[in-house]
Length: 110
Image (tube, rainbow, N blue to C red; front, side, top):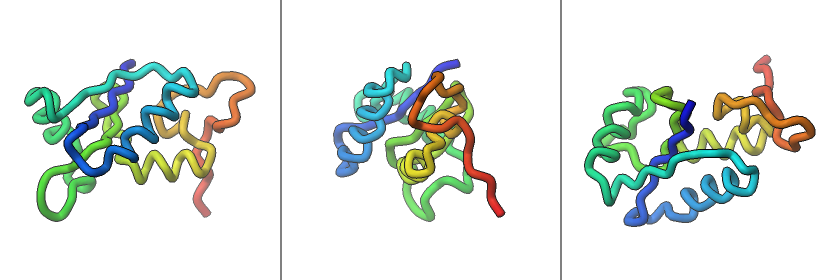
């Protein structure tokens, strides 16, 4: 299982990217950072693997985009919502370490 975070230093959303990467680093969650600006293969793979219903109405999907292996997890907004709900590990498809402040389960919807 490989957690992949697609980023680009050329986009104005650098703060969102740093927010995701900083959280993962602070919580010692292993991941691969994939720069879509410096690597055409990364850009192509990300664009082809973001589901249709998660793409913008026009243009291409912008980073950060998160994947667990090839399973699409979401964008920054989905990550932020999971973090706010203490459900980041569930969002990432990972088991939370014992005593973690960030919960394992997504909240149930009523």
